Amino acid sequence: MNPMLALRQYQKVNGQAQTSEASPHRLVQMLMQGGLDRIAQAKGAIARNDIAQKGVLIGKAIGIIGGLREGLDLENQAEVLADLDGLYAYMSKRLVEANADNDEGILNEVARLLLTVKEGWDTIGNQVTDV
Image 1 (cartoon, rainbow, N blue to C red):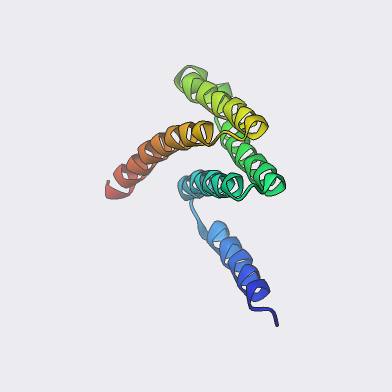
Image 2: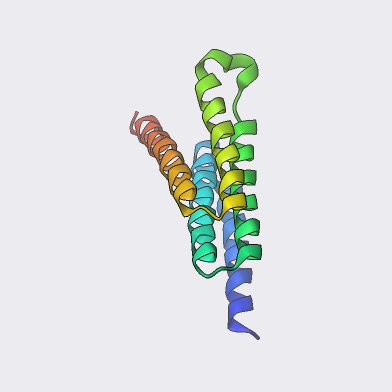
């Protein structure tokens, strides 16, 4: 058996197990980390001049941010979440621009923004579990 194929299969099964047992808070953390990982991988693809892979990875990052945005309860908490919704929309727009322009600087900008949101989310999780 191909060792890389075996590793990918293990990661897929392991990831499915983690998501099936994770709390909603942990799932959001995992999505945010996945977005950061895809952005970092897209930067690597730009450096390798692998344009097709860059597009796939940025597309995945956009999908993850879209999923985070869809998860916002705007129906019941529109005032509280409006800024975050706008930030997610901005990140998605900037990722489209990064893809079109092969711009690592934009990818860095979006990664910093997403990391800031993730750090805040991580802090909330620590407060909830410490209570």
